[in-house]
Amino acid sequence: MGKIAVLTNDLQADVVHKTPERTSAMADAQPAFVKFLDDIRGRGHSVYHLQLVNLPDDPNVERDLDGTLPLQRGSQGAAILADFLDPSDVIVEKNKDSGFYETELHDRLQAAGIDTVLVTGLQTQICVQTTAADAFFRGYNVWVPSDCVVSGNPEDRDRALEWLGGYCATVAHSDEILATLDEQGELPRKVVKILP
Image (cartoon, rainbow, N blue to C red; front, side, top):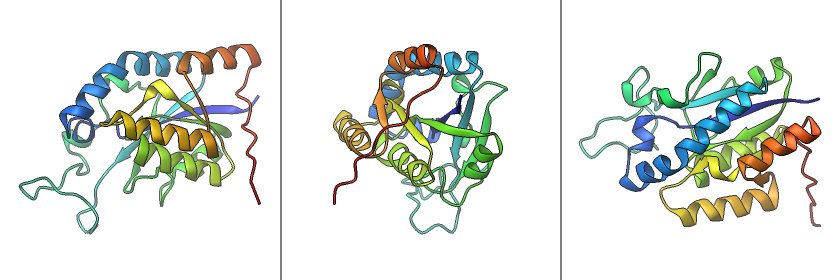
């Protein structure tokens, strides 16, 4: 049986509460999301939180209206939200949207024998999408639980899920993922058809 890990993206106050739309979308998703993480842990699998930390010299970082750099290392706004965190979880810092870009994530997953990742969090069309694609490029079996991804704009979320499902990931509701895992003991790899 392959080893499975959930990867969360940006479950941090500075990200979740950046706009009222994100805050509302996360509030709607949170009960099922937290339950899914608990169910995954209860089945003996790991949770890795990808913690976005902005670097002061990054020219692409969007600053607050007053010029303040959000998501600074060690700040309260950059901390993983407590409702999603368990002492058994692993936190991996990232400085860009993808959790694999110049981070230790791949090495840590390989050391733990992980071959299947379930990519969650926000925003679906940015960090979830880039992390899932980068996981696919590295040979991971990629699943995306559709009710555990969030965007401030539902159309952005739906468009990203369609792209992910059509390319590099199996997209399914968290209940379906857990049922598949319980029935088969693993999550089957998506057959990707590359057109000439």
